[in-house]
Length: 164
Image (cartoon, rainbow, N blue to C red; front, side):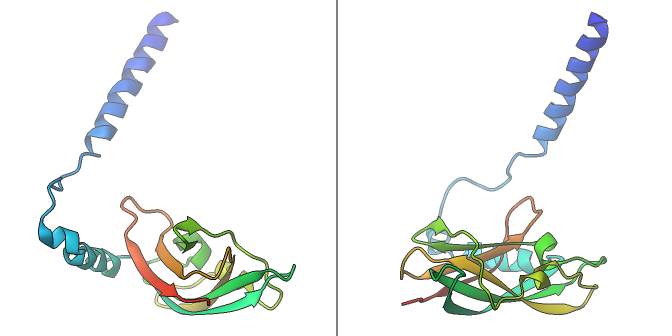
């Protein structure tokens, strides 16, 4: 029995070592003045976004109130499924909204059809969806979208809106 446990432990350790070997980065840790401007990084992100199985645009942001009368922002997205399988915005995209660098919570808004985020979209089709976020204050909003399951968290879309 102890030999079996030892064999399982060694196998797990070897598998973990092989898995972690693939996690090393080939990017240089030095930063040039071009890296500091953000332009090469932005171009690389745009290339990765173009290779994504999904396309998303952040179309609009409107201020409203949630079901308790608190201020909320409704962000409108257009989601296009470029993959080989039907999927939904909710399953494919991780959308986040920030104020002052802090992620906002989702809000419940009465006149918003949030079920569209769960609608299956066939390959090549597009859909407009909306998501509501509870506002903390009147500062600008930054909205970011990435693939829900991704190894590098490439930003597919990003926008900033004024709510004042």
